[in-house]
Length: 631
Image 1: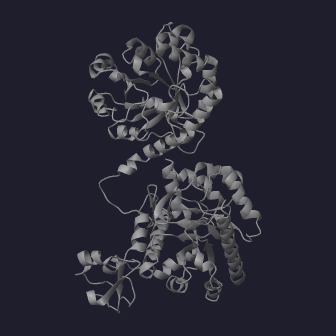
Image 2: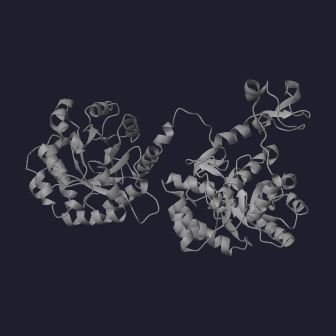
């Protein structure tokens, strides 16, 4: 079985393994829902692929010899339906080729050996085979299919445990995949008997599936929680259609949801640890209260309740954390009135060779992000010559922009990060379908580009603008990117080059995790390379997005590095753990980025606090790793 996976699922044409097995794999049973139409069949195959299904499956019967004429009403209905939806061998061959072109596995169900023989001209082109519930004890059919050295799946609906043990147990070492199934169409909610999956597992079968005829696709998730690692469910164009299987099927929208949930099921369960994610940290900061000193306190003093007041936002620790962990500890550095009390204030302060690190950062174009209100302060205590203004939507149209121009040093280098948000809980989107959002986004971009021009005039150097474009508007990727870059390159609102930022698949917007589908996938890489378009490469986001697609971020880096003119540096973990200190996450070694062209802006979470301690620590880590690698 494993050899089959490696051989048939690897796709050398892509940069990532899109067919990596997840908690369970979904097979879209097209069966007879194609209505006998090749066009509908292909539509369903494409829908299955786009929704993330592992494979698609059809049924085959030689209609000319399969049915014996009877006078039973049920048989007449079934025979008429089978004749109406019959696919010829040439049509099945066409569907095999189409499935292969989409890199989705294709299988077929057989009800008797005669039909297997009848399909001998194309049978080896299928990726797997299925034996339906009605033939679960057809040992001869199962044995014949196993000889083809492809996975064979057997549904067990309508059969008792005794029958299954008697006929199928001998095949358990043949890597047969057994599917629990209730052979009703549809199955009444409450009749699923999913605990039978445990019985099948106790018999010793390695792989257990669930063939779902339920009205609710969500039942499949319960099956997975009990150990099913294969899911088969009927896919249809219309659940209200006239076909015999339509009512026990799902439309494409449900398949998309099902595959999304299955893909995330491991992370949904998580583990027994409880580590707050980045969104939670943001919410704790924005929604919670923290401790602020009323007066100056000296190193080695205790902090008493009369020394502080509790206010929002929480820039440091909560009063609860202080009382339980730090009440009887001395602070390790001097603090001023108004300072937020943080964990670092009780820790041993790391000493830096500041002049050496400043020189190293300036030489390697390493910079830090600054806000308009803290630029003067941070540039004085961390004079590394490279700064990126992170603007809010309010600041863009304030007098602060003009005021800050008087504070800059012409020998420094600057970049500007466009606001992500607009007033009214909206996200920047200059090509939005919403007229107001489109207008406000374009006015924001226009003002930021004017500020960049003014800044360039004063320092006589290029000032890159970085922007996060994350809104897809429900349009196809290529069309959307064409429109976006047309705007960026030709619009009267844009009088300056803007570098789109590489993004994660899950972004922290408005205190929650939001899935986005722009500047974070293999399709985006191919588009950017094809059109020779420059970007800002956020290394943290690169690793997060690659992890989501089960890809190697270093391989993606090889394709993106040549078109990257600006960099953001922070470590990451998993698919949504961003802003980690350099060297503490999945990336670890950042020295490979330090000899590249363009500015490298450190974007470690809350690195600006405690007199920029996080920034200094990041520079120190970069310096030591870089020097070590050069030895």
